[in-house]
Length: 527
Image (cartoon, rainbow, N blue to C red):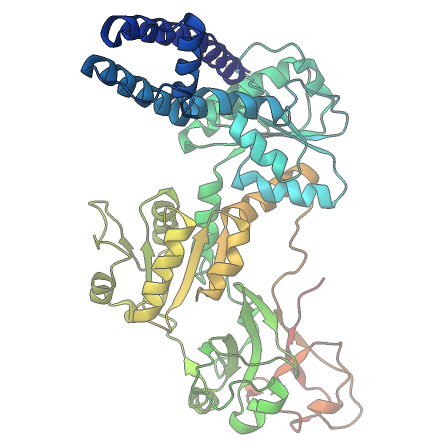
């Protein structure tokens, strides 16, 4: 409202300035014509000349002057007219007209019965709003900044432009909200916490904290939960690079010592490129089993119809001999080598701390004096000197999404096969980053949205979990082949246990299973 008042005041000043300039210019012209040219003009004629000159529309009968003083006066008035048309009007008139014709944003809280209130619009809450609306939950964005309020309005959200740090008279309506999420900056959020609790709100109140040291204070101010979305993003990025933080597959302890779980990539030179798993017939050719492939960092069990496209990362299991044979068809990826974290911000720093806390080998590329490497991640010459190929993972946690894309292109031009985990702000940039060459991309919006949705509604938008390795003992009356065993859909036999210490790990559809044998299987995620 203050900006609208300022526009109105500026417009009124400009409007009052117009007749003053016209009158003074006309009087000056009338005086100078009588004094220097000896050709007097009436006030009406002088006013006509002043209007034509200042508006740059041209002249009537007055277009030539002989006295230098009058010529100089005419030039000054002409330049003043140009300045007024091309500078004063855009500065004063256009902003006022925009404020008059643009849609007005409500400045008072509506009735909030059962609504999710989000204070402060941005990437951290965008995903939550989409998920909540998809579930039929009524939402309201309360935004203290007018520009951000219009951005939220243009994206289709119900918006109120309001500041809780200023005196308001309708905060009592907060008591009827279903949940409140504070995301407008720590000082603004603190004001909301006190206002909401004083208004009688007793539901979940979640604060997204900018400064981690403020978390405890936010809880004392009334927050049910206070967390830092960028720290949550850092933890997620770190988990993608460490088996200690997140095992690649659940139940891996059921695999025997004869079995090895490895990660490989489909290279552009592989003879399996473009084939389906069924067409590749990896089991018969090598004895190894393709368990799953990585899709956006999540393991997806393979089926006979799964296509092996370029750069796809797959998880395989088998004996050392079988995996060596598979390595001649696919590109083995080193399980060791540590992680290189690239970036200067909170996400990069925290990712490094999480990995170090888990006992992982990690190095940092940043402008910070503590970093092992200091340089520009967008400089190909410098990045080539870092030795990217020796790392198992590279984590890109840069300042903005565009910089991440460029750094990714530079990185891929130097080390095409290193596994890259990228962090971005906006969810809509995930696909673009994956297409640019990232193996995994986690957006701040998606991560914060999952955390917020879980604490607001108790639901996790990710309904799928990882595949699991299990041991089952089928009931058999006679010896059968693997292809004849009745197993649930999607369950894949990984190994056959014949007895204590005896296990056949390189199996295919023709492998025999005897009564009493146990099967080590890979079960797909439970939906």
